[in-house]
Length: 417
Image: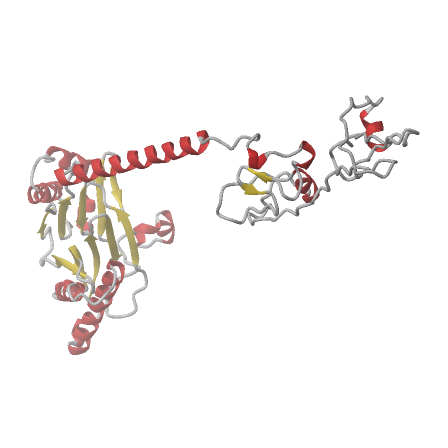
C-alpha cells in the first residue's frame, strides 16, 4: 500500500496591489502508465495584469502537458512541460501585444518513489529541511545568484537573468535528488527571502508536528510580521515525505525462505556424501590376478592406473582427473596438464620398452631347460649394473642388459648349459 504524501500551500499578497503568484499540483504521467505527484509554482512579472496572466498560463499549460503521458521519463516530462508553458506565453503576447514583456519564474518538482525530479527558471526556491539545516536545491537565476560580482557591477539584486517570456529561455536548471524519508521540502517565491534562514528553521521547528498547511501559513505569517513596506507577493508550498516503513515479512515469504534454506542444506549434504564416497572408494589391489605383472612392466604401454588408461593423458575430457605419466610430464615441460590460458593441454605418451628373458638351448642340442634361479651378483654400484653389464663367462652364463631408455635397472638372468 502506497503511503500518502502530505502537501499544502498558501500565499499572501504582501504590499503589492495584485497577486501575481500562481501554484498548482497534479500528477506527472509517463507513456508506460507510471505516475507521480507533481507540484509547480510560478512568480509573475511584467506590469499590471501582465504578471498574473503569465503565471496563470504557465501553471495551466505546465500541468496539462505533464499529465498528458507522452514522455518516457520524468526529466523529459518536466522539460516538455516547461517549453509548453513558454509557448503559451508567446501565443498570448502575439494575440495581445500590450502584454509584451510579461513573464514569470517557475520551479516544479516530481516526487517519485525514490527520486525527486526538478526543473526551474528564475529565482523561485526549492528548499530541503533536514537535520543538516536549510538547503537550497536549485540555482538562483537572479543577479543575487552571482554573489559579489553583481554588487561590483552595480546591478540590482532582483534583476533576473532568465525567465519564461515566450522567447528563448536563457538558463534552465534541471536536477534529480534522492528522496529522503521523513523530510520536509519547500517551494516558495522570492518573497520568502524576507526571512533569514535561521528564522525559517525556527518557525518550522515550532510547528514540526502540525499539518503542512499550518506550517505554510506560519511561515507566511512570519513574513507579514516583518512589516517591510515593499513586501512582495509570497507563496509557500510545504510537503513532507513519509517516514521509512519497516520491512514486513509475510507468512508466505517466511515459508519460501525456509524451503530455500532446506534445499540448500540438502544439496550441501548430498555433495558432501558424494565426496566422501569418491574419496573412500576401495581401489583394486595391485596383487589382483588381472593386475599381476613384473615391476619392470608397470610402466609399459599396457599398464592401467586406477581403472583409466595412462595413454594418452588429456585434461579435456569430463571424466575424473587422470594420473600423469612421469616421463610425459617431463617431456611436456610442465608439472600440470592445464595450460596458462585455461585451455586443455594433451601430454604426449612415451612407451618404455620392457626387458625380456630368452631361454638359451643347451650345448648338447637338447631341449631348452628352464633356468635355475641363482642369487643375483651384487654390482659395485647401480650405475655400473645398468650401464656396464658384465661380459659373458666361460661357462656360458650371459647377462641380458636392459635397453638404455628403460628406467628400470637391468635384471641379470642365468642359464644352465
